[in-house]
Length: 347
Image 1 (cartoon, rainbow, N blue to C red):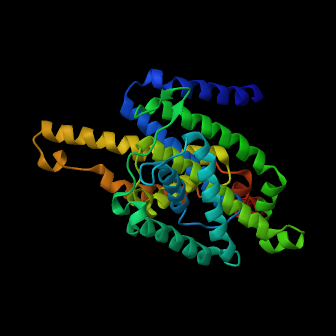
Image 2: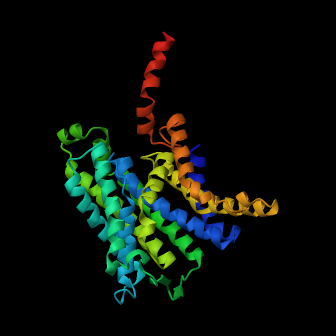
């Protein structure tokens, strides 16, 4: 069994490397790359929600901060053109600082109150970006520099971005897995279970929660840089509350606190959003034209994506509240009553 467990990640990695050779449709590869961006965002939110137990509803704001930081410093807007590769770290650092800015005044808040504050932050950032002239206003920032590696320009070819996302996701998986079992990771778990008990055990809950906000925001900042570079443009409309809902839906579906579960949930939601619904819309419209049905020929399934997200979340909460691939702790918590009730029934 251990051999199979070790072989599966290797086989999966080889398959992912071969995907552009198997599926040569550039729009499909672009959808896979965009799904990789959702995976990074879900990893970042998992630090805050899954590891630390802090409910954040405006996570797309950090995504926007990372993207706009790259847009400011690598576009004709201010005439600054900093290279893409160091900007990954710069945007991550800027997003992390804003994570501290949001986390510092909200440390005393918990549950619904924290969710409302983060929701407000998530609404403020896109509005500020939309109304300030020096951010490009509603039109955003265009002609953002795209990456170059050893003289090779990525351009609008989705394949190099697909591989770039794979590399960044692999690095994030390695770092987060090590972080999970580090001292700070164990502190996050203790805070999630009982913050008062954690503080009495000598854990610096203030520092741990600030670290969670800043590290989660940093990952969102990295996702923002890759997003802006791939599209070569950013606008406030791409960072609204709907984006935060999509990230949270991926987290809940996959299983909070488990990296593989979060990865699975993000891939499912990402493919549904970026590939399946657009393709299904084309198929239904083509079928409508074939049978001369105006209703089917004009249908747009993308309008129903949040209906599908809602249905997915309702079904998950009803039949598998811990998610598809939950962490052992979450599974034990949610099924504790059933497990303790079983011996009593046997008697």
